[in-house]
Length: 64
Image (cartoon, rainbow, N blue to C red):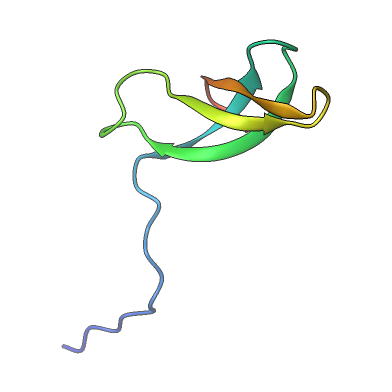
């Protein structure tokens, strides 16, 4: 029996989340998180194009 490896990793338990600016409420970014390793919502300091400065962005649950 021969095992063929196609070179592509499986997604597993990664989900898409949107990052929403806390000051404007606009969704500016989309990223993937591993829901096993990341238990709570993430907060990142990202650039907000409408305000033209860096602000805190919080994750919004599952996108499709």
